[in-house]
Image (cartoon, rainbow, N blue to C red; front, side, top):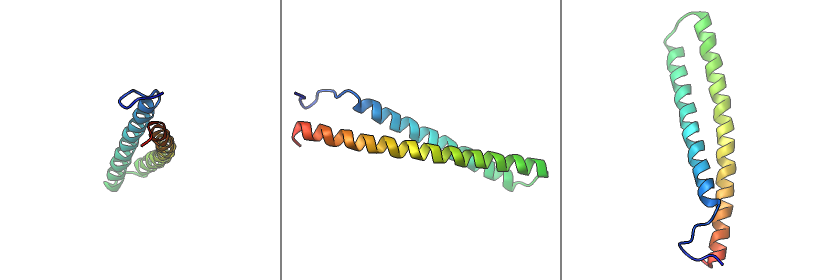
Length: 89
């Protein structure tokens, strides 16, 4: 039986993964913003194309991280509900 205050294996791992996913998402957003600033500064067609490629890559990475974040959040919610059920809260 699990007691209050007793560590539940896996829950900390899920929280950690969620935090990591959020950090990666923030880095991707920052990269996207930097690419947008670089793009708006003008330049050659080649630099514009490079900026477009970076933006597309950043957008793809953001989509990946959002999917991971949603998955981890769903698992975390389920784990929390199971822990509450076990504890009788």
